[in-house]
Length: 278
Image (cartoon, rainbow, N blue to C red; front, side, top):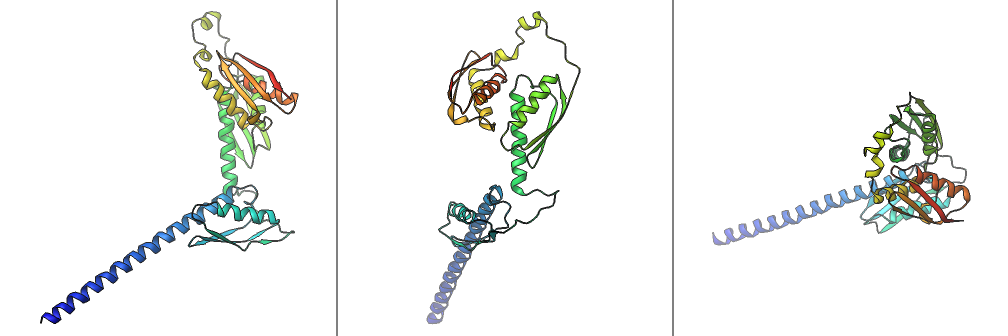
């Protein structure tokens, strides 16, 4: 009896141990599968956002830290870029790069109505950037405008207070990174009454309430979003609403544009760009 009982206990213990090992193995497998799926998604998303790879039909599979890449590209540099992107993902130890390089490869033709994931993200970024620049500008603030972007083509709809503000909105949109064209459909409304001297002296000038730090930040951000100004080479300081620009630009035209962009920011009283050299 004792022997049978001991054998039963031993068998039960072995069964429980095997169950525990099996459960841990299953949990590890599930965890690895989830991690591999996450890595595949991260690599694919980066390909979709890349302007060099998004048009190619690339596939990614990950197994135990090894990413296998398949598909076709037109140049070897694109194949190498795909590999480096995959290696940059956390947990990827090696890449089996099976991507074919065909010099005459033509990317899949997309429907004129269909945008890729990367194009949708690019368009949303452009729309947000243009809206921000218009909001920060003293000449377009408060205007009722709608900004729509499709494959880099921006359409402006709504009302502008003056013809000058309408044209300025168009120029600001055209000078945004990624914009390929601007359809300015803004309509000029009847101008608002000019503020009286008494109103100006009553302290209702909103520019007085804007801090120098806010101005400096918005000028720098405007440069960063602009396609014709090198943000890295320009230093911006603000004191009492007076902006000073220092550094280097590529040409006199770039200096004039940098000055205009800064002057348009709400709260700016003057812009000194004499220290901008080229």
